[in-house]
Image (tube, rainbow over all chains, first blue to last red):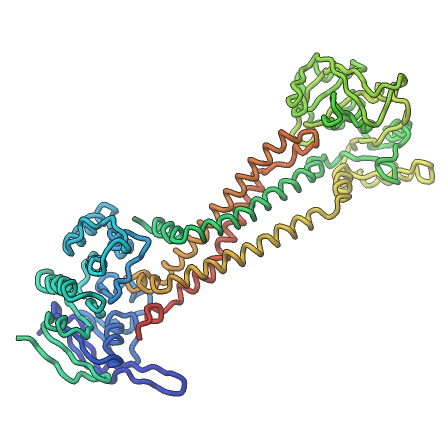
Length: 230
Length: 385
């Protein structure tokens, strides 16, 4: 039996807007095995970002069940979810979302402030993470002193520094030129293949999807196509 | 890096805004410390007054003298232990700008009526036995560099001598200290010398200060004395020294109320400015707070950081304001000793109250933004729908 990262069972997400109930997805089933690399594609408004949000525990589902490593996470309270996210999930955003007042190293160190690691251990982990994304020499630079690609690599270092099992990436190459986007995608592939991270990428970019082991096409809250790479 | 660095970095992200907020808080606490110190100074006489020390003055007001003969009659009242006359001399040293807070008293009774007065051995006796002797408070002696044994001229801007001169010669016989800071600025001469040499107001005294054998007797003694002189040309008003000092300062108006209103208004304004600016600062960081929560920072941790920011800001501004007030008042005391503002001092209780107020200000101004940070939904913060 496969070891699952995520198992979604009949998951629904609805919003109430005025008198209308808007269904984002309804009775969605999805299994994402550990160390998988999944690209989720679909038109705008198809529900892919909302799916990423509920996987990351930053949004609640209306009904159904979400399991992570065999344990339900949809019932956790806010404090438990925060701790679960800190321990298991790394987020990578389209616009990097780095703290402008912190250096690259300090940005990377942020998730480690929630751990019991000593400052020396934190510093070592930060160096390792920055080396992995090829930015060891930029540790003391502020985000404004770096290119978009470098900022995204710092964001990746921040996502992996606490060694989470899963990386959730929302349009990680959406703000980058092709060459830089490819560098970022290569890093994600490396993290999946060599470091065993489960990578889930929401993207409009077919190139980004090509790096994944399989692609799920979501439209109006329903998976319309599942493509697996040979 | 640690949480404290993160708090400091957030405070420093808009340096001009942080500096302006610090200036606002600095001014509020400078005002607080200065006004409280002033209040402390003018109330010092009240708080340092022994409970069994009473004062009889003319019922019209204390600027109208009483006959010196009242002294012996008051001494004869049952329960009165020690009594002395005390008359304002209006003295100055060399230049009218060098105002001396100078009274004529009975040297033999002074230490009995004011028992917390201390002098080196032998000095009190020397003063008692020297008709033209002076006992000088420590602060005034230090200000003019006066030493025991020195012979000095002191002039009066009220009284004159038979020869038309306004200047008296004195020997400095004693230099005294006392826990009552305001009294350390006094200069005391013999009431007999005063009475023998002035050309008017002879055989009178501005007031009679006396002690009772028991605080419980105060009320009955007050009534006895005032009853004794009722319907005479010089009716008395007798009260405790504390009440007298309070009445004296109340002539300046209800200072406590005025100071409370000024400080409260300043603080209300600062509260609105800092509270609103903190709120704006948190609003600007909505997305960053969303990111922090995504990384696993819980609502309470975010709230604590926001509260720590407002507390740090408030404490820095307050400590600068309190420190500056303490330094400035210390310098002013040296420059204005002639005006007897010795008790105008940023005391430890004022500093403690200031720090307490700073903590309160920090908590109140940080409360709403901290609550907003606590409640902020990640999805809303990141605009992710």
